[in-house]
Image 1 (cartoon, rainbow, N blue to C red):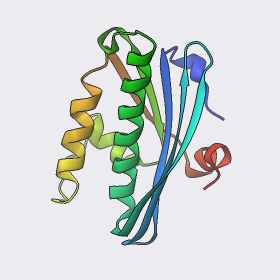
Image 2: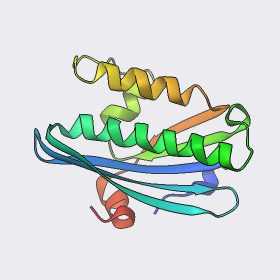
Image 3: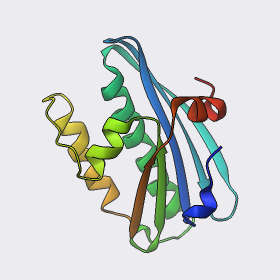
Length: 140
């Protein structure tokens, strides 16, 4: 699917969120893989009246929180870790990278929370990939 060797990182996150209806029942999934080969896939439910973009951000936040907890459980200092995030949300990737503005008021607090969590890591790269690549791994 994606060439994780192109960005050798201590932790890789593959994230995807969406909603059935827009807004509708929100869901998400993420896969965390670390430098030692540990892999964990998590499925999330966000309830009703969630937009696709909100679900993407909520999934990213949950994945970042899991990555921080994982690092601490292993005695790794997050500020010394490199993190590679792959998403199928071009909007989120561009906003996180600072190339696009966050205009939707309901996304701003989610964006701010994600940025705060990302700043805990030493080096961060976020990459957009087509939906079919993400769905092939996460199954939705």
